[in-house]
Length: 144
Image 1 (spheres, rainbow, N blue to C red):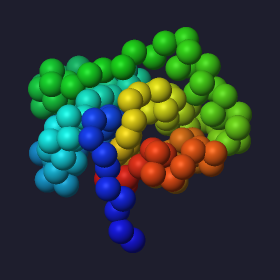
Image 2: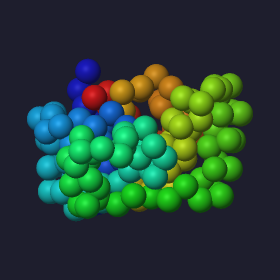
Image 3: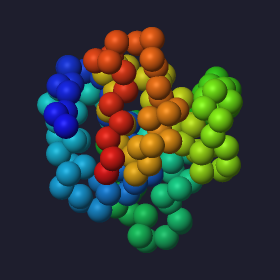
């Protein structure tokens, strides 16, 4: 399956796996980061993602290094509401899906084009689905 071309600007959103792999030096995720930087895209994570990745010990150091160079989006009341609505629309439930819904709501609220790196493309594709938006403007969910 051919990957669609991503336009200039926009946002690269990392879920917990994207953040953890970037911190671990994963070459594929680093390539997405480099591509985002080349096109002038902003790189971001939801603050809720920190809950999944950080544990308060020395192993967090590489994650903190990554976080010092990217934007952490707060989980506002609006993002929380939108995440709940996404869960209601998709019929997904449970704490794992709630976290994914917050990441999805974050991705839906940032500058387009958006690439979302995730270990859970099935649920996140459902959560960010925008059938009324042209395909080339939809969020590109990428499994990492």
